[in-house]
Image (cartoon, rainbow, N blue to C red; front, top):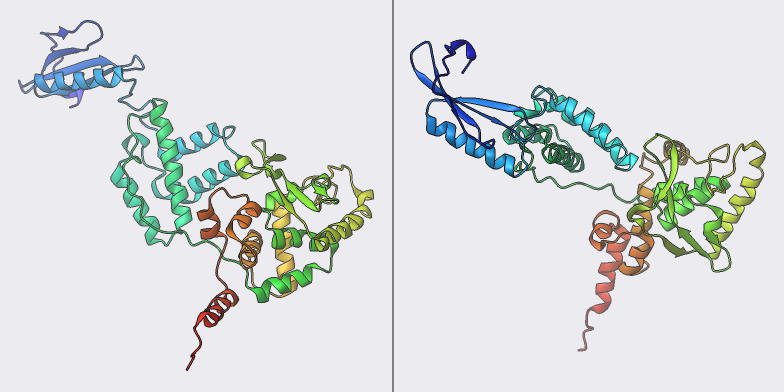
Length: 389
């Protein structure tokens, strides 16, 4: 009801004590009576609403008091803010609270998926139905399960914080049903291709060592770039993985703890020790060009931390030189554990991977190969009882 249709007669004003709110009748130009309820919210801002019946006004006041007593907001702090503006502000405010890779994921998701779909809608007016319709549009556009999960997680975290901090009265994502689309993980590189990649890598000591660590031991790219020569114990033939290289909140490369914070030590073979030592000797010949020495196994051209983008770019060059299709650098890790699974048990695989959940390891990093399936069925042949007649 707009104020323009109200005569301004506020006789009969009933004011409750102790912040319980007020109700007073308002005469309309048509002669009808409406009841205006007024109360201060948790932010001490006066809120009003008009009703046809006094009982409705009393119920509304009771609801407002209950919300206030529980520390809940019933109005948006900024009722005109769009979803896009709110999410970008939320992401920036969390930049120092999460890993830079998580921050980049949020920003990319907001920019590429959320904003084109619902970014212009008003945050305070966003409904659960609108979110579910948005999810449906993403599915219709054949978005991947992993991306859909990221969209849902971003919206859920952002609007959950808005309610927690009192910026919004409700979380529209709370009851939204996300379509059940399973993520399709990238698989291991086929043997006929990873063998060509390895043979091509052997032409350069740096590249040979890099592919050996990724393809045969299965370290994450960031862990590879965080390795220092002191992490190698030549006497016990072991490698300790205790750090990774990632971009920090400032945007610069920095050392961070390994994923899940679990330092692990894995054995090395004599062949792997020799590959690393050959790379170390080759590296020593190029140190004259360095301006810094961080004792890294895989540094950049001046001895500092190597950017993962550069690492990926070099891998793409290697693929082209090897004459194989395009693959992701992370698939080296999946190839390592797929091959290793044919040589050892699950608990040993888990120790190499650093994963706390076996289900994650087996579901996303270990895949059956044609060779493993043939061995399995051939093994069943050996179990068949012989015809004794």
